[in-house]
Each structure stands twice: as C-alpha cells, then as structure tokens.
Length: 180
Image (cartoon, one colour):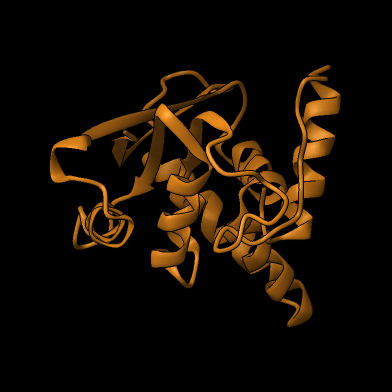
C-alpha cells in the first residue's frame, strides 16, 4: 500500500515485468489502512516507506493493528541525524513494550548490472523521492541538471572496478517489532 499513485503503478508494472502474480498493490494512506482487517498479517514490512509518512504515530498504530499476535513488523529506515527517531516513535506511540522492539544498523549493498547513470534511471523509475524530484525538475526544465548531479553522485559512490557494474553501499536502521 502506498499513498503515491505513481509508486503503486510502478510496483504493478515491475511485478508484471518480473512475472510475479501473488502480489496486490493498493493506493492508500499508511495512517489509515482502510480495508485491512485487524490482526490480519503475520508480517508487515515497510522498507524505506513509512518513515516518509506525515503522521508517524498513526502509521505505527495501524501497523500494529493489522499485525496478528505472534507476527512481526519489520522496517528499514534511512538513518537521519537521529538514527533511532522512527523506531522511538513506533515504540512510544504504538504501546509496544521496549523489550519487543529491536534495532540493528545494517548495510545495504546495491549491486546494479549497469553503469551508475543507468542506476540513476532505475531510481528515477522506482524510488519515490527520486521520482518526485524528477517530476518537479521536469516542470522547471531542470531534469537534465538533476540527472547529471545524481549521476555524478552515483559515480562518486560506486566502488565497482567494472565499467558495467555499479556497487554502492548505504546504511539503514532495521527495526523489528514483535507483536504480542
């Protein structure tokens, strides 16, 4: 579920391209998971998504609400200046006991079979903040400037020695909540 129609459509296209049929994409607000019954899911996952919600308290409550007893909530969150902010919000607002919330700093290694500028194109198609940035840049005629700046960034972060492989490391905070 995502509030952004463009991300829901991108997910549907990508699943279809990959031949994945046991998936459902739905436009909706994470602060109100309308249509999803209480205690329905064994596993609720937000990988770099819920952290962008404007009402994190409501998101945390909804994630706990739709997770069945014995289930888990797993979040991957980019780490801003306060590396545990989203995790602390989830603990406090959802009423989950401190002992049921686990944090671990993780490293994500992007291993892309292509050039850094090709990887920028993938982010442009599938990563919400980048999709939105390009949409705004296109309106002001700055899309090529944005692409150039991102390509320079991706090239500077690339640790691959191959001309046609891009390897970039990124840190995030994994938050796991055991729902009782």
